[in-house]
Structures are given as C-alpha cells and as structure tokens.
Length: 301
Image 1 (spheres, helix red, strand yellow):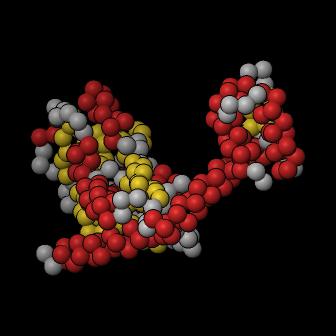
Image 2: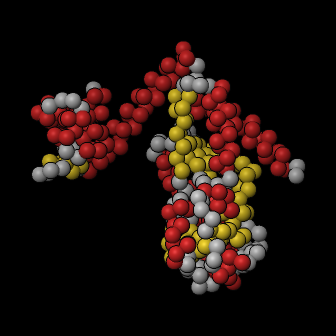
Image 3: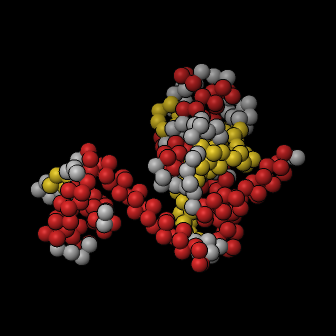
C-alpha cells in the first residue's frame, strides 16, 4: 500500500472536506477523489460517505483511521530507529505524566538524558491515570508516570518513592480552609469533585473509614486547573493531592490534608509484551538506576 494514500486519508478525516483536503495536499480534487477510491478498493470497504459539505466516516472508516495513523507512526519510528545506527540515539520519547511532585523528577530525568543524547526529543502528555493508561494501550504513549495503585495486570510497573498526601483542595476563604486536617465527618454533605479512578476514591474512603457511597461526589475532573473556578466561586472542594497545588497560578487555592494521614506514591508503567524503541528503552534503563537510588534513600530515612 502506498503510504501517501494513508496520509491523504488522515488529512481528509481531520479536515472533513475533500476540496479543502486537496488544497492542503497540493493536489486537485479529482486526483484526491481518485486516490481515495483506489484506497477503498484496496481495503475492500467503503471508508466514508460524502455529504453536502463534509464527509462522514463509515464504521470501517473509523477503524481504518485508527490503524492508518498507527501505521504511519510506526513507519516514522522505524525510520528514526534506523537513523540511530549512524547518529546514535534519536527519536521521540512519548511520556504521560500526572500533575504531581513526580513532574519535577521527570523534568530532571529528561533534561539529563537529552544532554547525553542530543538527537532525542520528547513529548509530555499531562492527564489523569485513566487517560494515560488508555493512551499507552492505544500506542500513543510509550510510558507513564502515575499515582499508585495501578489496578491492571497489563503493565510492567516500577515503584517510585515520591510521596503525595491526599486531602481537599479548596478556596482559601472556604469554611474548612482554616482546619489543620480534614476528617471523614467533615466530608458529609460537602459538594465534592474527584479523580475519575474509582479505585482511588475507594482507597481514600478506606483510609478515612467512611462508606464511599456517602460521599457527595458532584463531578469528576481530569486536570486540576479545569475546576479552579468551581472551587473559588461556587464552593466545591476537590479530593486531591498536595502536589497539585504547585500547578495553580494564583493564591486563591489552599490544600488541607486528610486525617488519618492518607498518602500514595508513584509508579512507572509500560505495556507488557510490547517492543519499545531503543531510545525509549535506553531512557527507562537510564532512569531505573536513579529511581532505585531514590527508593533506597527514602527507605533508609
């Protein structure tokens, strides 16, 4: 299959209009239509339906779009891997990372690695644990830094002794903001936001000795800044970690820890039975020694 056809199809799905896609691809509309027809013939299925202004992907087209992008990405990665034979390590490391204290360590590890291997690049994707795992499963990320626990057996994991303390993120003028610690009783009736991972909510409820069904969970969030106004203007509180406070750009938010003390640490995950590029594998090997040293240091404290 001509990879130019795959590229043309991906451009079409992003733009949604054959005429406009032809302009982006610097070709004529009839020529692009002919190429797409050849692609459908080769695939053996109709991939899209023309509308008055936009195309609509068929079920086969939706599947093919995902696979086509994966094939193009794999081809580019293969080219980069081959170039490494003459230029040393090169290519991109695709990292998913929760917003927490681990972010400072990831930045340090990436900067040190890139100094040793200047032909490498990286892409950092900030999200919650659920989203990062999904992106790894789909092949869009190489590795992820998540908060424990990680419930799936699909991943290789490496524990990282960087600790987060759980509590409530809230407006500085909130009623509970003056407390030194938040108990399970304090949460009764409180409009709460929380992470999308139910395993985390269940773990916190266990720490606080409360039934998770009694929590007034009004909504879920991905990144913390998405709910800032709900905290500062509408009286919500967010079940969160102290490391999130580093990502707020104003001083309207405060954090109060739970009592009993509730803490989590981090883990590095990669997909099991999945071949990583030499660059990604070298990066993981590189930081493994630093992670082990960090774990050992914390263990002796």
